[in-house]
Length: 177
Image (cartoon, rainbow, N blue to C red; front, top):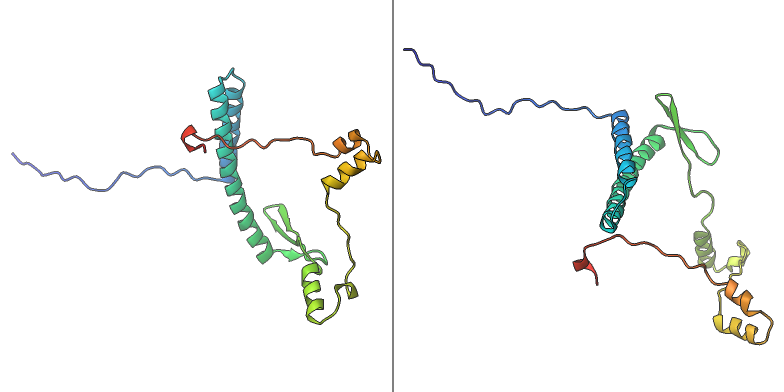
């Protein structure tokens, strides 16, 4: 009998690689949102609601990080390859039938730099700048105005901030202080 020795190759079989596109990612995201909406439409326990809040905060962080990176990539492309379309320096890139603008957010003179330059030349800032008056609250003075009946207690109370709360991210009890 003729026996042939068979050897196994140490090469992994080819796996199909799914090519991602913005369209396919968008479809996956829409499917996820539908599943999330279905889950949220069910009656949920307190633990499930808190867990859901934790999940959505994590998603928010991940989406925010991806958006920040995508924004940076887009900004690099628009500023490098876009055409200037306004006097203030707005750049526009047209690609695949879409246009995206990058608008400069700070143009003109920086007041702190102007003030520094004037002071360095021994000039008063008023020589090239306008003065702006700003007030801060002094509760003791306001309370005296209430005592003197120049301001009513209701007027004083109406000046307080409306209470609001920032909901913090849920964390395991062992992490609480």
